[in-house]
Image 1 (cartoon, rainbow, N blue to C red):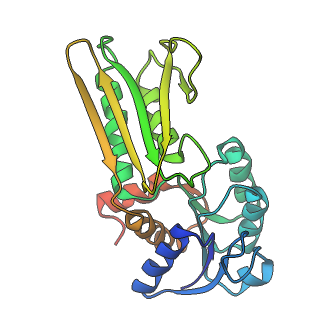
Image 2 (image 1 turned 90 degrees about the vertical axis):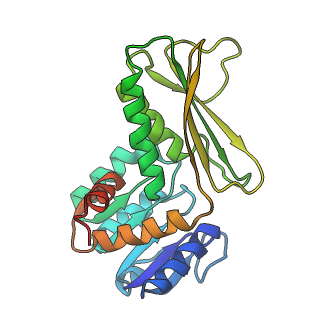
Length: 251
């Protein structure tokens, strides 16, 4: 496939290497900061490509999703920081008839982390001595917090843990309300991504920990996601792709 990369920072370069390794070509690199071939996506660019992978900044993403949907090309979106317009974006895709796969993280390991933490939340639901929190670390150039990965994990925990009802990303200036799930974010150095769920009681504690060694797992998952999306229509969450991958249906 001839693929457009939208966002050509470190992640974009990693995806490009995986695309070439798997026999694909990069037809254009779009980057708003000037790192690519052009700064903006266009209908002409989309017409000449077989698909798109986007890992960019959230600014302008609603317009890009509209253009993607109208093109009918398969598109993988790993951009985060725009959850507040996710339902609007999904409606645009479904109304126009696009083909979009979105996820906060395409790493298989990260999705195992989501499933393990969601299951753990259900297991401690009736054992109130265990308090629960999440902490995530990323490199100091990451602009959004908590990360999309942390939010996805937190939502899964909230679904299973009845005594927690909201995400708290900033300190409240006093004790954390018992109903709040604290999601603490640390930005330091060049960390690709670390996420940890802690279940803490007066007598012991347990942790579920995921640490990325680099960006390769994210990039490989995004490329495999685009391959999976080919021939499918509509709006798809990364969970659907991962389900197929883990159950052996995706060959």
